[in-house]
Image 1 (cartoon, rainbow, N blue to C red):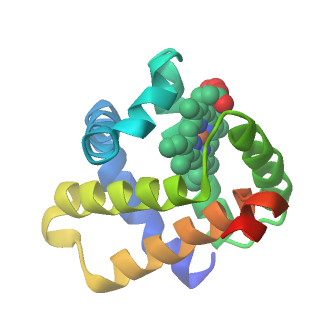
Image 2 (cartoon, protein in one colour; image 1 turned 90 degrees about the horizontal axis):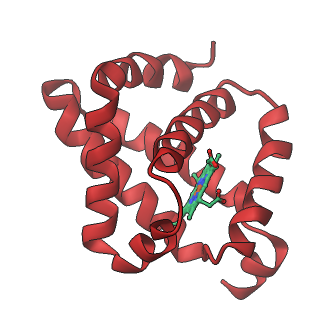
Length: 138
Ligand code: HEM
């Protein structure tokens, strides 16, 4: 396993011990800071939020571990998201919310290395989701 995946996996296990809480806190944080994100999710079932979070974290770890199939997956997910009105700035909103909640729920386990590793991987997967049009606009 890559060094970065080795660092993130045990932290993810701690975070996922109470998965409903993790999901609730991430979207509460995102919607509180960015009501526009809440509008995007309003028309979808609540189950979508949990699915999205689980999938994002799985893809992040697999990407950190060098799985190349992840890139193809992210490209088509990204196309779907653009059609649904997700803009590039929203990816950084999501990453910032994840990091705030991870820090809070990890307690004393949290450290600068963990924060840096999560940020790197989450920004990489966000970047892979951006379409060519979105990249050109940034
Ligand atoms: C790391 C980046 C992201 C990943 C890997 C990701 C992944 C996913 C996945 C797998 C789904 C489908 C869930 C299901 O239908 O069961 C989904 C849905 C959705 N995502 Fe994301 N997402 C990301 C970022 C974002 C961001 C930044 C926003 C907006 C703030 C967003 C908004 C939505 C919305 C509104 C849906 C429901 C509509 C749909 O099914 O396409 N996503 N996401």
